[in-house]
Amino acid sequence: MLPTAIRYSLSVDQPSLHNHHCTAIIARPPQSSRPTQTSTAQPAQPGPRDIVEDMTIRDLASLATHLRAHPATFRDAVHRHFFAALPDARQSFPMDASQAHRGLAESFAAAFDAPDLDEYFADLGRSHRRHGFPPDTYPIFATATRQALAEIDLADNVLQQAGALVDDIVAFMSTAAHEADVAGIPPAHMGQVVDVERVDAHTRIVRLECGLPVDYEPGQYFSVATTLMPGVWRTLAAARPADGCGTLEFHVRDVSQLPGASGYSRRFMMTRPGDQWTLGNPAGQLELDPQRESLIIAFGTAVATLRCLLFDAFDTHGEQHAPVQALVINDFPGQHYELATLNSLDNLTPWLDVHAFARHNSDPHWLKPQRARHRELQRVLADDQVFADGKDDNGKDPDSSASLSVEENPEETIAHYRDWSDHDVFVLGPETEVNGMLEAFAAAGLDPDTLQTQSWGRTGVDTAPTAKSETHQS
Image (tube, rainbow, N blue to C red; front, side, top):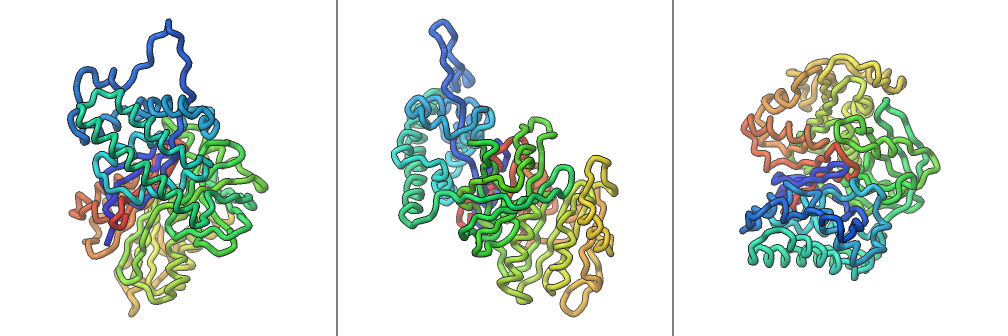
């Protein structure tokens, strides 16, 4: 059964949660600035109470709405109390506090909306072990969170309910972290960059060697930090299945040129062979059922997750797999750097069909795609139709090569092409694009709550793919 989920906006710096099924993408640990030193002559910092004025919040749903409206204020209040109680914790976070853990308010807001998020918070507890916090840190953080909630104008019963829920959540995280320690699961993995491939002006493929096996499932992602930026974590999805040797591949795209984005994503692209990366525990869950037809839609570098799922399905099931329709969407043709690889897999399997979409029919001068990959892309583009009508005995297109179609609004084309309710549908990519695809499906009559999604935001550094709350849990 698909997970009942909550979306964690995989924003590089601001994961956000919405009531959609999404696979848990990694949200970052609490981070913020060092408590501001103010003299008695200075006015006190405004808190949540100043924002809500005299409007008392009388239920948890309204509290969730308030936290979503004022995430930075709540985060800063939590960390003001947390760092005051535990000053040494400050060194685990980046100097630029504006880039620290902006998903904190959203995570608690989601919990206040739908408390059944055990697997998501268990992932957080296991993931936060990478910071080296001892077990007695968790009660301190719970107290800091309750102190921040007390600054909001809450009815007494709401403050009591919210505080109890915070205690439960943090206790659950602590238990999950302890169980992982007892089970001998490493809190983090160290990897050395062995290759950085320039795909185009804004995209790199980074390959690591960890020296020891790193266990993870297809579709999972890691919180990643580099020696270039201590304390700054970015969430990246694995682009190949675990191989038992500790070799990993990540696709990194620079979004620093977008409005509101920081420069951290560009710094991740500056990594070089020999650099050391730290990987937190893998998190998230995407389930590709070999017995059910599937539609997988990948925007941009979410093609990394797509290829990982497909190669694992081929390695595990060979030709015995239900049909999979894989659709990759980018702005420009030259951004389809993985299409030749996917085309090769398409030609090997009777169950896979790959189609690519570009919103524009030519590349801008600044994209400068890698020449070798671009030549391969041109070689495989034998069919420019969105879907071929003719099928052979195996249900494949007569020409099994992957195709490219130029569509200004591919979301509408896909959503209205047919009734997808008999498919398992996956939507992967940046939050804006994923939301647009969900809206198109909703307009076509497909319930978005039946989909599995993995999304991330584009304006920060803590990008965790979106979590789904588990019944099957971004």
